[in-house]
Image 1 (cartoon, rainbow, N blue to C red):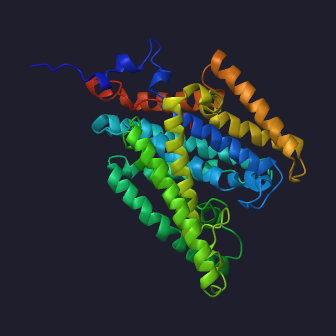
Image 2: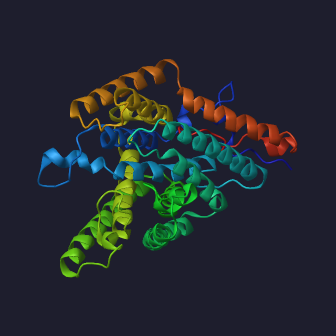
Image 3: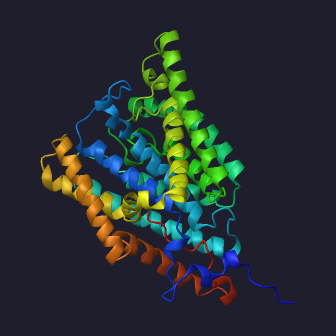
Length: 383
């Protein structure tokens, strides 16, 4: 006896005539959060460096430093969840095909990151680490949200300490930096620590993100983690003696210190931003249209802004100009709005999706036709 198809998994509801997933399937708040992350990373790269002081509004732009890239890494996990079934993970042939797509995306992102790093700007390019995070999540695609979030919590506490111990060891034992060690342990974005953010994002993406209750819970839990970590760090720094050499960072919440307190605190900020973006998108979707446009072109915007930095500051000098940052933001918002309205997806996003899709489709031709049926998981997030 033949059963009626599940409307939520009906390809006709999710794909247009050309076979491309409709924008209606996209969680708009996620795009807005991704757009905010990209603009925040621009602030860290272009604006005047600041030290955050909550009682000084002139310093508040420093909130973007470190936290924007952590939000970006968290959204990597959310993107993987969207590709692999959201709150109902795919399995069987669909799972194999999604894993292949993710792997191809990771390879492309790694190569693009290498090209951008070859420009030798002062920007620490995140895309190579982003690619490693994609690969690291492949074994976890069938995990439930509760298991993923529990793993992320443990990783946020344990992995920063492990990363520091390994960094001290490698600094003492290696005469010259090893690229693999830099990528995983000693770099600006050590993948061994940053995988905690991606796992948390995958767990978040496995929740029912359309639920107002879940959205508010993300805001409250994220804010609570931030207060707990930042407040706990301040109390312990005042109460405890100075840590031993090499471990001075352990109580710090400064950007890119990589302490458990920074990971939990800034990770909490990222979780709260995701929840807030989803909630605002549900209540006032028009308010997020500009950020949503940037988020839909996140990879293109990220790559182009590094190229522009190379053109503006070819000698590697820090731009450090608030006026330049305002110009970056205005031009980015206007061009992204125009591009998404006229041309749809960005050039880098379109190319990345096409390569991943064609590769998986070519391999999938050897599978039975029923197994190759389109599922809601086979959509292409912005990054």
